[in-house]
Length: 217
Ligand SMILES: [Zn+2]
Image (cartoon, rainbow, N blue to C red; front, side, top):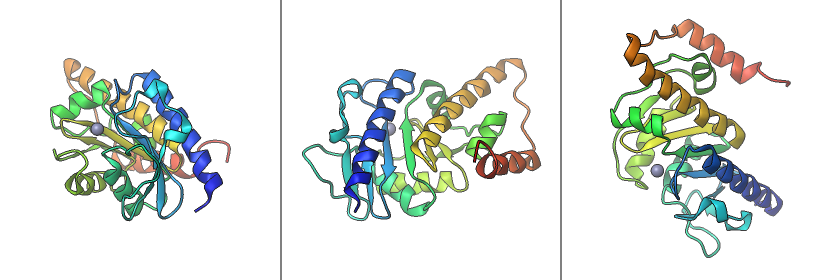
């Protein structure tokens, strides 16, 4: 394992955790963030720590096969979910799990978010599915999240929150913001007759554009 890469990922995870905290997507010590180091290792936020006081060295290096970790701090209880997603999706390098208000509202109504916003379908790949209610940090939750994320980069967790994934952690962060906004728009639309969904043809076109052509590459 590349120690330099571990350090870089620790800095990125720590910085992103603080940004996430200040953006209001999480409250208190809830939510968690990780970045992949390689096939076997990830760096994840520690369990139950105050985001404002986190420092990079406290981000926990976890073996994704055994869930063994290095250092004195315990990793997030949802490490099992992050590890399962990285194992299932080789192209994914960053994961963000939030308990943001609007996403949690829709997740608590146990509904998916239909494909309604342009940026939602571009970045998240269409409808945001709902993972069934399961106990946090269990294999069962890991399986449900992997299922709900199939061919998507965002999912809701029933009565719990949301999860987004990306080719980079920065992309997962943008996904969390877009998912939260889509959830808010979905709720607001209920008061004016309900949203109109975007067609599958348009979803495919826009998602392909984002994945392959968007930006300065
Ligand atoms: Zn959670």
